[in-house]
Length: 222
Image (cartoon, rainbow, N blue to C red; front, side):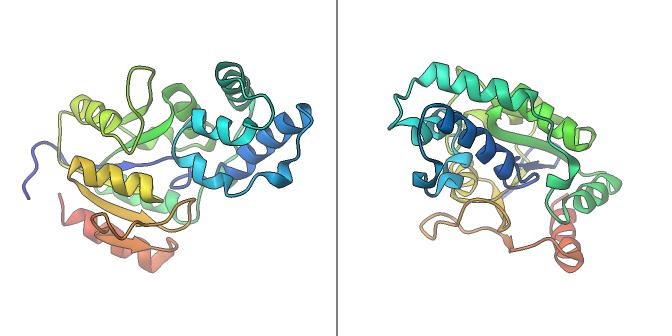
């Protein structure tokens, strides 16, 4: 398939570039204890990291008098004040970004996290300068796996020549819906859906060998 515009590699954020799970879990745990609940009853919470703060808050506080706007505002305020250190970057990611930039390959981020929080996360860990554009969630746009965010991103890039790199079914379905190739990184929070279009590449970890393989695949798309 031929795509129009400059080639750009689009990355998901949480679970793909940065492992924010320990920080998010700690914030939620403190909020649950504050409400008199038990974090031990909360299972498979990582799944909700992929689909946005509203559903994450509902999963965490549905038995504790869930208040959609108040809980989400509190969570995001705490997260906004929490520094995310560079050691939360996944293994191999910084080398991958450095080598893609060195080869002149454009990169962007598309996340279900709000844009300001996405930029703040990338800035904290020292990755922001690698990306041409950062598209996070917005009030009037549907989150991934709907294509609103990716569509707005592609318009800002003036390109449909994109590849999406993510960590689970939500990103896989987003790429499927937008009809672009998907590359899966298995170090994150999600799994693949065999009923959707399968990824063109799938890596459990980004070691030196896998990084070289991935860079070659992306170079061939330019």
